[in-house]
Amino acid sequence: MRVVVVGGGPAGLAAADAAAQAGADVVLVDSEPRLGGQYHRGTEQHVDPRVRHLPLSTVWATEGRRLHVRTRPADSPHRTGQVLDADAVVLATGAHDHVVPFPGWDLPGVYTAGAAQTLAKAHGVAVGERVVVSGTGPFLLPVAHELRKITRVVALLEANGVGGWARHPWAAAGKLGELAGYAHLLPRVRTRTAVVAAHGEDRVTAVTVARLNPDWSIREDTRRRIAVDAVCVGHGFTPRLDLAVSIGCDIVNGFVRVDTTGATSIPGVYAAGEITGIGGAALAAAEGTVAGSAAARAPQPPLDALRAVRRGRAFAAALASAHPLPSGRHTWLTPDTTLCRCEEVTVRDLDAALARGAADGRTLKLTSRAGLGLCQGRVCGREVTALATTRLGHPLPDAEAFHRRPFATPVRLGELADTPLLPEEDP
Image (tube, helix red, strand yellow):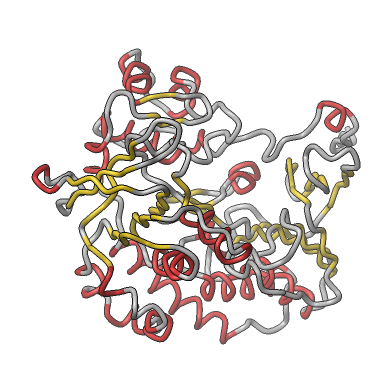
């Protein structure tokens, strides 16, 4: 049988290895030139030699378990295409940095935490000479750790408090060894504090930092301005759900719903890693092993991996509880704050669309233009949905519209014309 794994990070690597070891014919499709994803960037990773690895390749459309793939960058004159028909598909598409908007977040010099870490770790490039790191979650620690090797980090700000972890001591116990590696940073972390505005003309030159209430509303008497030339922000991660939504997988609370084997609501389609819940590389790899084994119909379940998944999901639940994104963050915004950077949609534009009766995700996109630009809502969709929910007073219906894309990646008209479609069924 053929198993196609999409994504070459920790979950995808583990899924491909497990499926190959179970005797399946495995194809691993990865958009990056090298295996490992963001977590292993800069370190060589390998996959079972029986796995057919397609680097610099993206699945741009799906028809059930038929995957349309393009290889090489979108602007390459040598781009090639192929169609992969699979008996089982494992989606391990990962997640990308999530950023909470604030006035000035679209200025040059404001980076996602992941981008800043990649530049520092893989290329030795500092994003600035006076850098502030702000957001929420443990990922801020390795980012600051890498930055401090090559530049000056003037502030490390955690928007939440530390009390959330006190409610989940056992879930966090397995991470104490990893945390010890960043012990030198812990005294520098200022909790319940965040960058709430960035300032500058052609690029960022200063930020406003403020203490926050538990709901993330600003304690007005604590605002102060700090001179910086770079800001690194990260407020957790947003799962890459394009293909899962395209295939028709059930999405619950923003993640793909899976059972204990990694099976989704669509027969023959499995999911692993950050698209099923944010819990770190160890959990992603364990989920990949479980999903890859199930997809290949391995005769024996991977018991060690199943136990690791249970432990990892307990940590993931604690992580979500300790580092929430409360709605008070919307008080940071002004009417002129940009929400959708691609289409330059402001808070005022979104409010106008809601006032005109846009009451579901699709209508809100069409009316406000948010999510209709180059990134197709990958950056802004989650925050646009959250702000609309706050304004409406109830969850925005059809919020999945910001993940629903006919084409998951750019494709040329000529390539589309040459794409073979599913054959018509016999009458």
